Length: 201
Image (cartoon, rainbow, N blue to C red; front, side, top):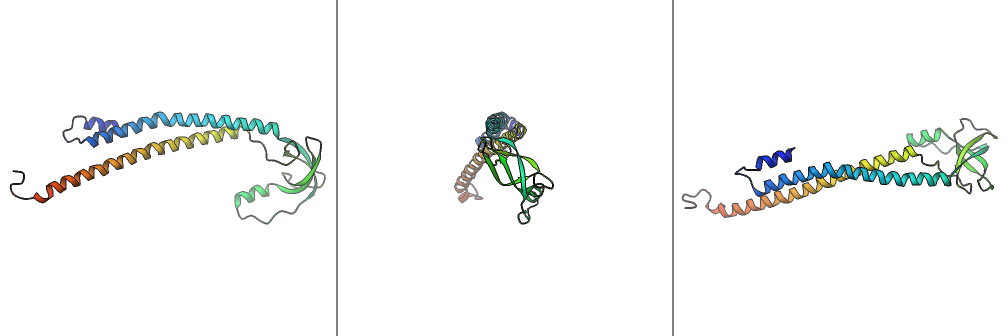
């Protein structure tokens, strides 16, 4: 709105400088780009990211398997972690030595994290493995993928706004520098005669 008002104000103003009009047009162009380009950048980034993540979700669901495992014995917990976020996640699980059968039929065993509150030998719980029985993380779900895609779109929109506004500020800085340089040149011409009687006659 300031850009439109600036264009209207300078439209027939006798004090208007060329740079004033350029500055107003620059602001208007930046406003139009923000209104048009930002939603497009956000939508395109969100769609592309969501498609890529959903493809990853499908692949993970094909490659990862949720299998029952049996507790052999409980394993001592690692030293206390001062980070409250990681320590709270760790406290919700227990390290156990367990054994399970891989999708390819081989018997596997190892120390894994269990969500059992008080694991005892023989207790069963579920864990995720690849096709060879190696323990892997839980596959990404569609809701999380969509959330990540929306966040990526928001980041793209923010970056686009920053790019457009940064470009406008840079051009404006160059305009102002040129304006000051012209003032200096004009002052250099008028300075020696400033205040003298009959100057310019």
